[in-house]
Image (tube, rainbow over all chains, first blue to last red; front, top):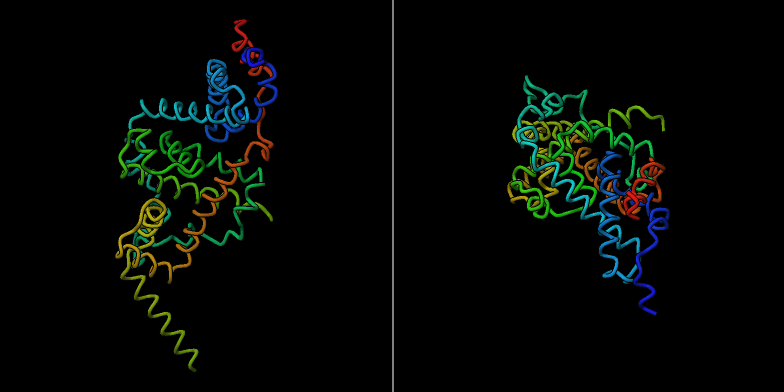
Length: 199
Length: 103
């Protein structure tokens, strides 16, 4: 009985059943379709190898998502390993234009760039595809490592220490990158989504 | 009359605090840090006072949390809700071939 189950899984069926789900999962985090396809292929290959160990323990999809997460992490590690950190933490990417640079209110918000009321809840935003398009477009211009760090922290909810260890960066650099990413993303989303859409 | 005095007083307190506390540029950095670690007492008092008198930074804080909560909620059930790009037919075939060892 058990023997019959141990045969290799039906790969075609795997792809049809979980391919789109896993692909979207990866694209949301990597924001790059080619990279997502690569990661997906690596996931299925690894799954094929490890299939015997899995053998019906829990849901197939949960198991595959677990492998995919590892592969995505590997990808982040790979792309950030080569990139020099300078770009992520140097002063050029500080967004000083959002704040006044002279007068008695130096360092306070420039009224043209100051945050406004969004009148939105996270719950509503989750279902707005156009919001997520803007979200992705806004993350794209960030340095690779900064965007990866932001995704790991704010999307996947990893702890600071885990991210530092994974990408081999200092806590201080992590905080600088997260701050830059948030400052940029919040502003970009406000300009491109909240101020543009008639809702 | 009393209202006028109150308004004037409020304005003065606000002005006083904004001039003496760390400016918005430092405050938004502190807001980001507050999402990563426990602030020291001094940092935390400065941040609270600044937020008390600065609606812009209040919104900033609110927005960062909206973005975080939305992103995590989206991540939890993203693929089922998204109408984003699906896996292309070519990529699907290519991966299938790799998996079945025909290539």
